[in-house]
Length: 304
Image (cartoon, rainbow, N blue to C red; front, top):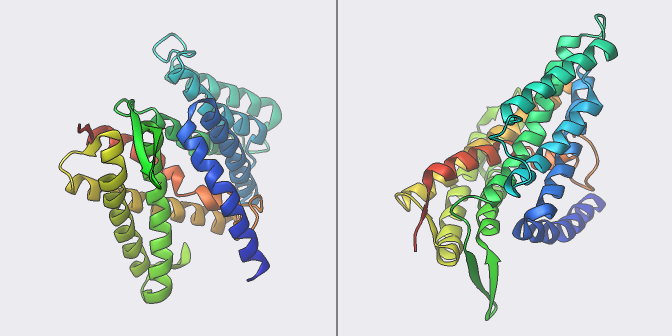
């Protein structure tokens, strides 16, 4: 076994159970995990931006990205009221004005202030804004009842919201594995070689099918019996959700590949042993989580 594969395996064995436990537990632990991941992802994104010749306001963007999941946590805990005078739109406007003010002093005319503000704003929303939807899915309105799950002859009571959030996470993973496996074994036709030379049409279809199968299996045998949640028009609604998640997961992967190709780098960083950077591992979730939040709001139903 190669040293890189060993590092990848060890990291997965250690990190996966911790991440699942945090997803199930939720609350401040989940908010902290999302905030840390968002801040690191923003740092990586601004490194890519600098490699292309842009000059973002790194520190401000990283802080905004990291604080966004914490703000969503505060909203669900009743600490922050988005319907008050300092609503989401007002906060977003104030952040934009702050970045513009910083650009006056820190960038000036000669260091492309428009590009600095635009790149910083996009980077913070692309990372912190997108990942915050993971917290929103965890506390989706329908996911409120305790969920009994039988494992190895024992019954454990788990939070419905945690089991619901695991669905898009598992589907993104299934899509990635399916696309890789089918692409390696059957891939003949390149998908978008100018952006990601290794991806194939056959792999994309494999990821789509894998995600749909996992969506049906997980909903049929875990989500529905444990949480009494289901999809409108099941099984068609479940399969549609699985296909949708796979499609946007692959778009998220292609988007990050596009950014890396412009920056001329292979990995966004080397923060994760054997895996590259945060963006390399979570690029698909930056698309999956916001889209899943909207789709679940339309498709999810209470099914006792």
